[in-house]
Length: 131
Length: 282
Image 1 (cartoon, each protein chain N blue to C red):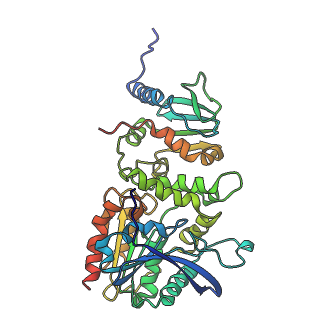
Image 2 (spheres, one colour; image 1 turned 180 degrees about the vertical axis):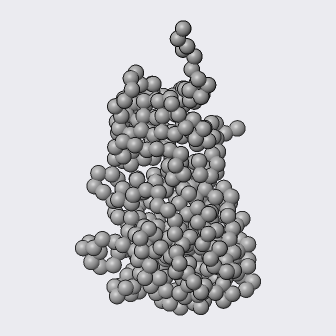
Image 3 (cartoon, rainbow over the protein chains, first blue to last red; image 1 turned 60 degrees about the vertical axis):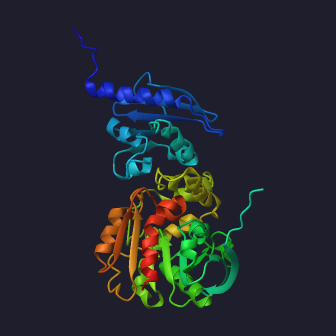
């Protein structure tokens, strides 16, 4: 019999990606941004489609090798630390993560750099609300 | 009506630097021990506005902050349009010394942040006798690069926006939004290629590893202050640097990043005041 149960880590990755999805769908800025951003939370991918400065969709890709402009990949543990309400030093910015080897940034970096604060603000929606 | 006149006064100084006439803008407030303030790469003297409005400082110090040529309200020297701006260690030292001499400052104290902190180390090495004390904020002899500076000046990415967005991560998350965004606004206002040109000093010409021997902190005290959230000049970078300088006094500052005096002046105050008290008592 085939076992469809997700391993515990995969489930945790998917839960974190799902939590981020519920928040990022509300994100928009008055800025002309069109970008497909692939976020990998451990083994859980989330393709965020941004059109005219608004998150249009954020879904798990339907097949491997989804087309995207840029991808950001880190473990769920690293994203969890990044998304703390007040992250610890060294875990508070995507470049802090990448400098310590916890985040891979791949793809075409031009749209990322051209809209860097937009992307940083978009990612910050995953941050827990400060009590 | 709610209005308040600040004590800061701005003036222009014409002075030759590197054989070229430069018109340098500076602001000052207070009376007493001259305290020259050096801004970070790609920014300007406005970073020190809070210290210039702090009566506990200006009652004892004449706080003077200038915009480096190419920055803020200081124009580039004539002929700039035909050259690529690249700050060198030699030109940076020459600029600081020319400014201090032109204003006839008698053994001023000096504080510099980031590239200003790096040049503090060079000044301690080269010109310690000219200064009462030196304060390096976010200072180290070297730090690992974390991005390609060619992103800072290219035709298809807005220079001001990418400069600000890159350094935004160096501001501590605890810093108040108003000060965070004021700090970033300066980066958005920088001239094309200027931040990148400053980083030539930081990344290429100003590697001071193994070049800081003989610093005499008994003749010119050296204070190093670094924010825990600075992942560009990390606390480890500063501690490593200080370990090679006998007598250097190091403090790692909590809940601060790469722009302490600008991003969270109240938090920084808790760290800079004891240093200024110590210098005033020398």
